[in-house]
Image (spheres, helix red, strand yellow):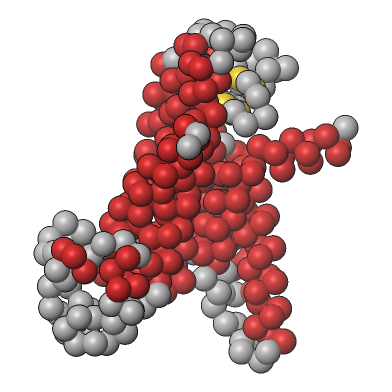
Length: 314
Ligand SMILES: [Zn+2]
């Protein structure tokens, strides 16, 4: 066993536990119920779920997807959310291993180890963002709601983490690109010396704040335009807050990438629905689900996609 597999295994198990908690959030947040009390119950017969029937994925398989008390089916959404969370955490744990090996196990690296906390916080941020996005995908799909408990809290968490990162930046340091695997994106690039007002930590925090404000203004403009032209609501405020959350965690361009990918995927889906005569011109799509899924892609591959695009323009 290599250390990487140990990291991935621990990440996967941790992800399953968080996925199980995420299922509780998905079931209760859109109804404004407490996520702490009472304990989990069967939605059909209201029987309390025993601890041994509440083990992520395994219990669902053992029970063959049915409640032990009333034998009503338990939706496959439950194990799927747990598995997706498990996979996301495993992938991020593998990234964490790459970061730690780079700083602490590889004696030939040239980056000062004061950058290690930055990379670790960036890793943590992407993990948390994934947790929130997976939840929002399911909640918007099932209820058409994107609860503030996830989006607004997410914006605050993303900005808080960027401030935490800024603590570890020196006064003249901007974006740090260490390897292909480890990107620490911030407002300024390595080639951009910043300006009189914004250098180092201020550029990092100021840039991220600007990213959130910029994304909100852009989407509000699109929303207004859509309403003026088609006389109906095309973009909910929940979608605006969702994209602002992605911007708070990842920055402006990854958020724009999410918007494009999400809009593209939603259009494809709409075309399929129209072709199969399942929808008309005014059917409401869960756009937030597509946006959140695109956010996952941007969180994992955004740096590489944006780099490749920038190369193409050169
Ligand atoms: Zn039941």
